[in-house]
Length: 224
Image 1 (tube, rainbow, N blue to C red):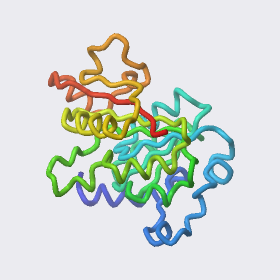
Image 2: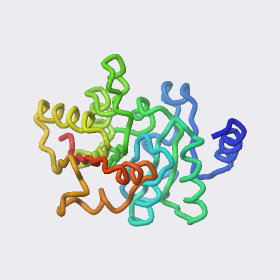
Image 3: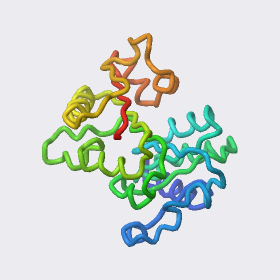
Image 4: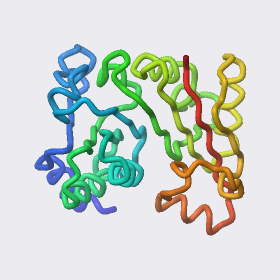
């Protein structure tokens, strides 16, 4: 994507009522007014809140919002030019249960209060295979601790990835923590009992992986 096109998308995001772009200072200094108030002040309802972390173009956020009008969906990504597509589509579809936040995932506990979130989706994250980059891996112990803080005790986390490494790393970590995994499969689309919520929507890159016969893995777990 050219820099001119990126700039155009950034500028359009500023006009989208479903896009929130807090400053880092606003978040780390606990000045983000929507923290703890998403239902009351943004969505104006008491429906469950579902996050898509590293949402990319927001394909899951938009699809799930259409399928579940009785839930609120929030896509989070630092790259606003990517989720511009999802934000624009949501407005065109008049989806009042969708929002996008431009922020770093590491600041998720500055965006949401304790037990404010009902469910989390992590779709095709960078596996960060190199050891020195493990601090950025979205299912490392530090990130899991953050998710546990904002999630309700019964809330589930979904991890869908084309990386066998990421799948195995996370599964091993959860087993070491004594976490009971609700569902795990290393080749999701070959399993007749795969949850519909995990197979009903495919991202652009996921469809490419499937064309290449690359297995898609899936985990569903909670952190009681």
